Image 1: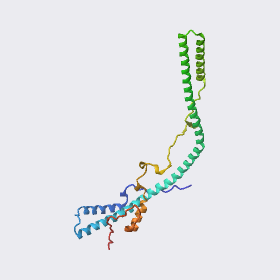
Image 2: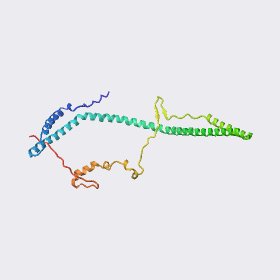
Image 3: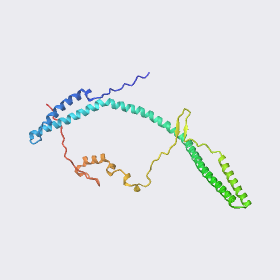
Length: 258
């Protein structure tokens, strides 16, 4: 029998780290003293504020180290669970794709038939409307002849046209109309699977794309590579279209207490 996987300890608050509590206490003291310091105007004041800055940087590095230590278990747990779930999810996706491969040809043919049947119904309705108008026109003409003419032969012909038009209309109306095909397939346990159009895009000619659909040029830069060049080549860095410059920044390193 496999033993259950031992889960790492999960921390939920910085106060659960004794080292963090000590560092925060030191920071509170340093912060209070820094806030009461005047603006630097003398060498002595510069030495004091410089020491404060170095201490804050040291405390920050120590806090970040504690943060990584306390969150290691949680991050490892999340990573392990994600790996295990992703393996299962990938398997599910492959099975779903296999079902798609089996089902899509049938669904496409079913949709083709459904659209044809829909068009047939539209055509049949148009034909019915045409025959109904033809019947109405023939009846109106027969009524006109009966009212205005003494020509029995013309009336007989008109009545024949009325009978033929009505017969054609009746025959069309008696023609069975196929029941509209369902747009989805109902599974044996009641599931429902349909097909829809999933519209996407692909580039046919990049030069024709309007600017509103392009990302800003600065977002297309290899920023990490340019930063590396700036740091390594400094004032000698050269890249066409790029300006390299320097900004003043302070650095501090805490002294070693002997």
